[in-house]
Length: 262
Image (tube, rainbow, N blue to C red):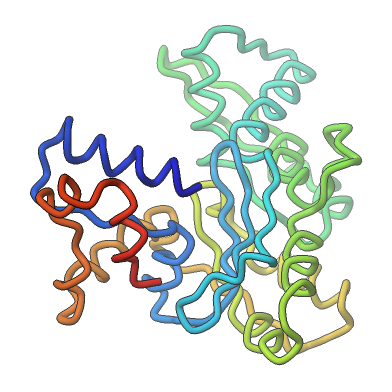
């Protein structure tokens, strides 16, 4: 982790010629963007899903969990569902179309089995050449379902996102756990499915038997890391924490860790 951070800063200075730089954890920036300093960030990206508990702006490293599955796996799953429906997507360009279908038409219901009984929820999608294809309700709701039931993809060894969240919080000090349960922040492009927030909250309450659980899904969550970085960089007390090019050359790469705020 430290070596990766040092490499990123080196690239910023040497290739992009920035006058100053600062490296922070993406999940922490997402938490800042939500206006909080304590909470658990569930970051569902394209290839990786993270849970990062944070207390008073400090990441709780023992509670960080990672799953090497994300949005691209869901797109692959949709391609398989489309193939079952007689629609074959083989090329990279067609895979990109499948991703667009996923982002536009797929959603997370409370009850998958009940939702599948509603063929009126089928929708059409217009391809770039003007051809219309039928995206049925099965494709729409089963595409994101592996987030809650990895066995759909034959991934029994992987955890669902609600179990990942619960296990992450369980690894933290019991005194901070209530604050984490009360502020679970969604971020990442693959957290944008309509209904995901409500289903996650429902699954967590069923899993723990507690009603004191709150999941927050900011509208800007797809870009939360960028927004949090902007807010941090513009904070009135942040100026002394920049790593300047001259410092980096004088003290070496380790300076990025010594000047880290969090």
